[in-house]
Amino acid sequence: MNYDYLIGLTRTGYNAYVPDFPPAAVVAAGSTREDTVMRITRSMETVIEYLHSEGIPVPPPRSYAGEIPPSFELVSAQHKTTPTTVGG
Image 1 (cartoon, rainbow, N blue to C red):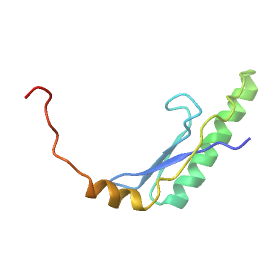
Image 2 (cartoon, rainbow, N blue to C red):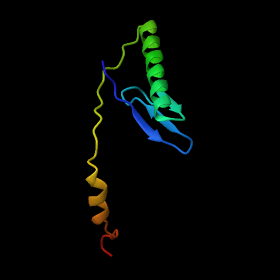
Image 3 (spheres, rainbow, N blue to C red):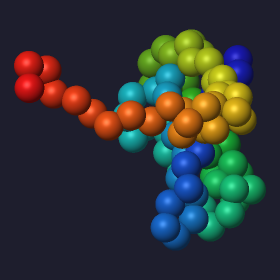
Image 4 (cartoon, helix red, strand yellow):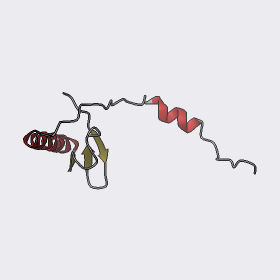
């Protein structure tokens, strides 16, 4: 089974989580992306080992990671509009 993980940049490094598991079940933080990947992998292994030891089913992978094309930022910036109010 292959699970997707998401990594975000923080003020002090990176954080990661696996969206197919309940919030805060599989999380990690690190000072570099490589460190964070290593830590999220270890976290995932630990959680799966725990689930197996308790006889709890491991959730199947359901997430899909996609990428927004690089041109999206340029296109959305060109089409910025000032919000308008309805009826006003």
